[in-house]
Image (cartoon, rainbow, N blue to C red; front, side):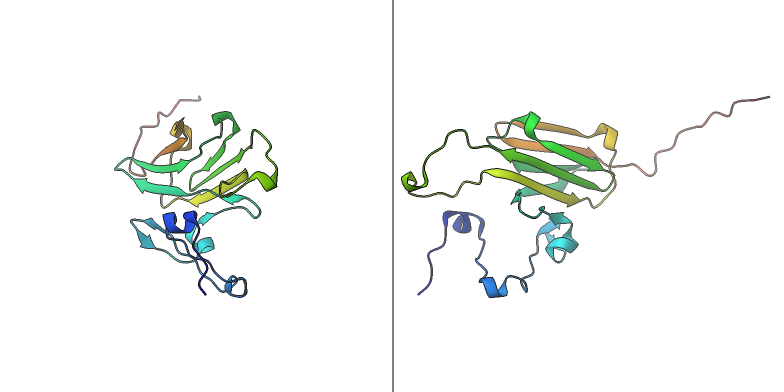
Length: 160
């Protein structure tokens, strides 16, 4: 008999992988224009072991790479966003505010605890010009693309 799919599985289209097949399963996520790019670790989008996974959208505009994710219940000061020229890591923790005994739950699907996500970027970005905004639980990280064709004049000083 087939097991009933959870709300999350129906919502996201996720499937359950039996425990004995878990190590063999390869997960693909379309980030580069919807193209599937390989296994999760090769893809460049990873969650740290023991952390909840953060669902994300990553897209580009002519000038920026944009990352969007939902972080409801997390205060902006509880988010830790680390940026390098080619990678972004978003970490945080969603604290449960009140304690309810397990026997009083009818259904429990919300994730409480720490979460993280590391995204390898398809192009280098300007770290100093990056910005992150959170509004109503939606986190938007805007990363200006590094313009490799930008030039500037270097003035030579006379030291003698």
